[in-house]
Amino acid sequence: MASRLAELLRAGRSIVSNYQTLINDPTIGDKKIDSTRFVDEAVILYAQRVGQEPLSGDLTERDRRLLQAQLDAMREVLDEHQDDINRKGIGFKGFVPAIFARLINEKFAAKVGEEARVRVTAPEQLVRNRKSLPDAWERMIIQDVFSDPKRPKGEAYMEVAEVDGRPAFRMLLPEYYTDSCLTCHGEPKGEIDVTGYPKEGGKTGDLGGAISIVLFK
Image 1 (spheres, rainbow, N blue to C red):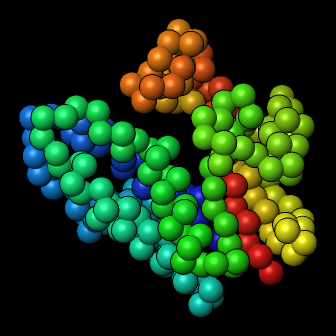
Image 2: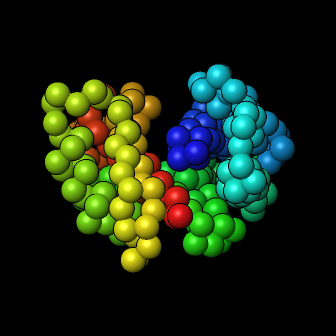
Image 3: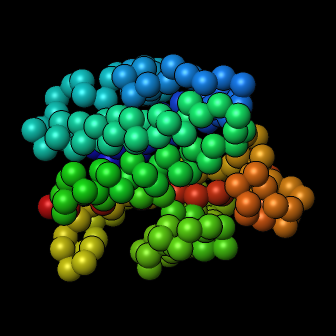
């Protein structure tokens, strides 16, 4: 279940990335990227990567509720940002994958309450928004587990641990910079990127972040 939530988030974020050139084209008004089209494409991409659609298979009522909450969060974010996406005369809209992920994770949290949490974090020196700083458990996994050269690259770390005094299943899925990430996070280090932040000087394959999932018992 944690993997489904992480992969669905990844799929939606990839769609945002794929549409960056169109979204930021100042000469086009209606980009025709409405919430229905967006979610349909995210589900298709998820199925291509995973081998089945997110709501398929033997799922519990709770599983379906959590996945549906994530899909609904995507729809709401796209609906709320239509004016920005479709505004002519302005290039960079600020609707980038990282912002999209944060927004849907916030909406997801509001929908599911204390059943589950989904967030994106990163090594502390790479975090741009303080809300995304790793907690103690995430920091330990990033520093001590993901740095192990013997560990298979990309393998998620899973553990049953207490979160806010409650037993929970935790998963941290490492993510690595791809070529498209380096537009904002690559070299030269310190140069201001299109979002107004200094570049981190990262290289393709470097650990750039992690998706953190908490499923409470």
